[in-house]
Length: 75
Image 1: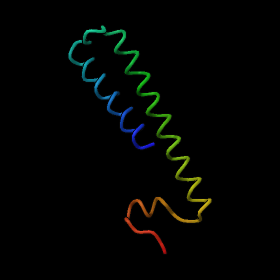
Image 2: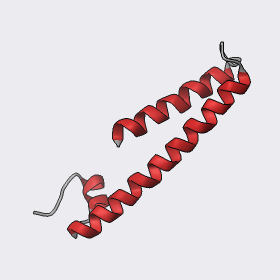
Image 3: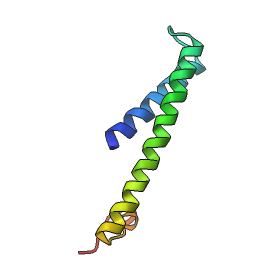
Image 4: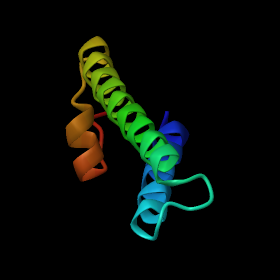
């Protein structure tokens, strides 16, 4: 999941930079389509990740968000 999130973020940023500098070899329309699709995939992956954290927190009866913030889990 993390690799997919990072890859989609990288693609979104890279295509955004290409668009800002002129559209690249594929052209501006193609880059806009790729950029929009990558952004949509990123949003879907973020929603799935948050849903997974909530589900896992409830199933295991532990506050994973607190553990992520503090770096500590209850024993």
